[in-house]
Image 1 (cartoon, one colour):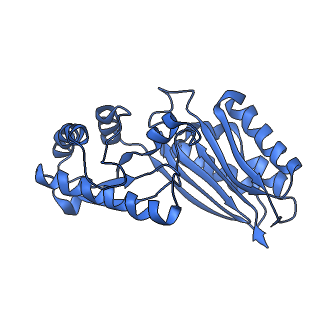
Image 2 (cartoon, rainbow, N blue to C red):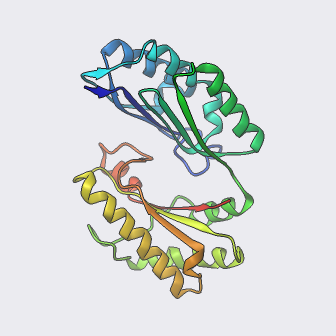
Image 3 (cartoon, rainbow, N blue to C red):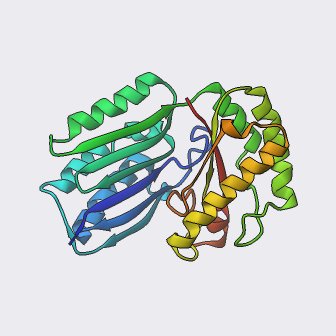
Length: 250
């Protein structure tokens, strides 16, 4: 029997303050309709009904004792401090990632999580404090999509043009290391989308190298369809999910 799973993409805009209507996409499998209704209700209280996109399913999963109550305690107002993030609860394992504005916010969220759970739960706090260099990258990318040829890791001319602009900013960062993260929509299998997203991130690193960005300063990863920023049920949403993300590493 599978374990209970909840995944919520939190404030999925690169700048949540600039886009207070960014969607909160909820996926995974829960044990019954009552559990689903309770979790969605709590998220709607925090973020507002219009922002919460329900992709939860109900299935045969084993729930730890009082799982619903513990998870609902995690879904507090301070989650709105996180941008570009994800909260994942897999049985008794909790992980949270994304960007926050200060170390105090990072510690506050971690402390609230610890106080909300019993000792059977483990928490992986992967929140990062946003730095000024990150804002420079976000402002340059400006939510634009770096395009590739369909189903390939070949940059289009418009994609190269955006990277030309990004390279100017990256050169100003000098020896700061960044991560290039490839994302896809959910069309096709996850098994094929993961390597495609990785290959596209590597293609970006190669192109940036041609513009003078040292390859050792650019880490790459591919997350396939796992971190959507929009609803995959619409063509517009799928287009937004096929993207390249830049993150300054601490």
